[in-house]
Length: 314
Image (spheres, rainbow, N blue to C red):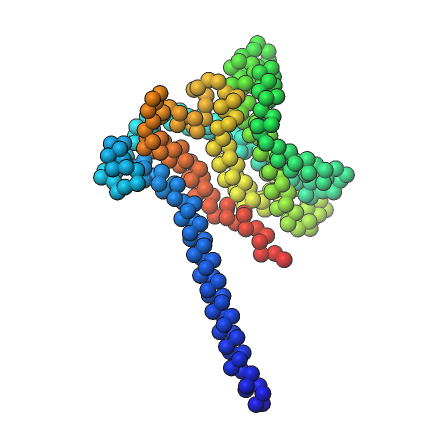
């Protein structure tokens, strides 16, 4: 009894010491996360701050100074001078169908490699995953030559040209559809990898029960598996919209008509030949970035739940 009483204070002190260490560790972790968040948000906050200041104000006081005037004149000028509404429509023509198609195709491939066992199951998944690691710059030359010679239904006199007009020059080059196909091809591997890993967490008993009930494969995919993948689909839709929306490389190489370029190229219209108004460019950049922020906040709950799925297992 005496020995137990003597050890009790030591135990209490040890518990208090461990709690103190946990509190200090958590405080340090939170401090680090807050510092990293502020560091990450600083460029965006500074761009917004600069965009609200007239050029004369920054020219007089300097960019790292308190403002004399804050207004939205730069946004109005950027909206009109850069023709942002026109380029927004160009981007939506490419991005919206591209996101829908790549997620639909990836979900079918992921369903096949995750819910059924067959000889080339693993090889197919590795092929899609490995193809996603190929840098776009490596294939730009052969793709450019291919697009210059690859026919696409459009301005010809054939039946297919009349039923499905996708091109105004009969080629993949300088067409919205050509850029869309590029995005679908390069993003398909990433989407298949994510969706296949998620579908593997769905109990196989659901698929087996549907098979016993006589449901065809398409019904199992469309009515049983796909509804359970909504969080993962929402997360992928958010990421894919951001990836395709922010792209400028492919459009710069494979589109020559200025009126067909995506919205990321609209910022070029804000630069003069001998002078660049950085305040105006900052306002244009903020306007161009708004759609991605809107999509993220609209799908925020599904996006976070899709990223954290399976994190508590084990």
